[in-house]
Image 1: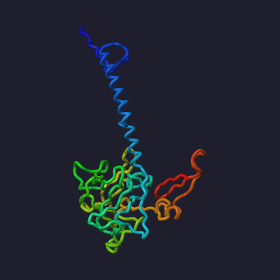
Image 2 (image 1 turned 45 degrees about the horizontal axis):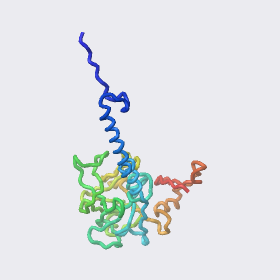
Image 3 (image 1 turned 60 degrees about the vertical axis):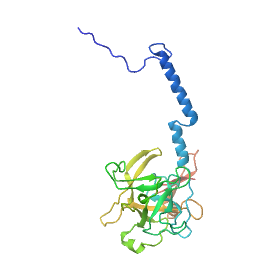
Image 4 (image 1 turned 30 degrees about the vertical axis):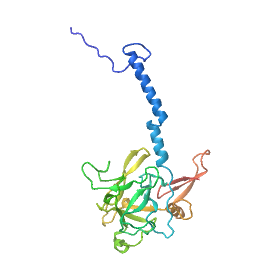
Length: 287
């Protein structure tokens, strides 16, 4: 009868203090790994520390611009909002370094000049941490497309070129020709078009991405048309500005005044006494 060979286990069945086999090498390896961990922790290089540092800086609150004449201007810091979620594709409408953009000229238009429909511009992240990145897109290819939808990808890039040029058009195609060349009002529905591909920025409400900041909706460049050849609601965006009174977002305050935000008692006695929630944007604010 042939002898059956027993295979050795691939994991250690004893501690390194037990002097069996290569015990000396294993002790040195364990000490090396421990020192490596302590060195990384001291320098803030651990993955958890990097994530905390990223969140601390990228989620820093940003002050949006206030529009005194009701229009958008070059140099304004705005936040893109689509229906229930912000441009970050999250549900929280809070301007931060991650969700706010500066309207930047690409044709030499001075800062402070009014932005008009069909006028090309760029959207640049605010100064500071991860500042100076441009919202960019390009034609979809087999190797380069949105992660889940496989549509035209939108990303951030350090270079400002034709791929980072955008323009705003009226959300209603029947009124688009009449509004061409007119100033773009702030805090109203518009369609954000990519100048090169002529695709509209869209929120993919049925596609969820797991990110460092939680579950969020995917954003891509694709024009969704209804039976009347008009862009659907997921192509409608609002350039949000701050309330001139200095109390939050003008859009949110408008929703509150229209009765879309309802107050509820607090969830527990230890927390805030009440909170408000919006039936339109799902915003939740503790009082």
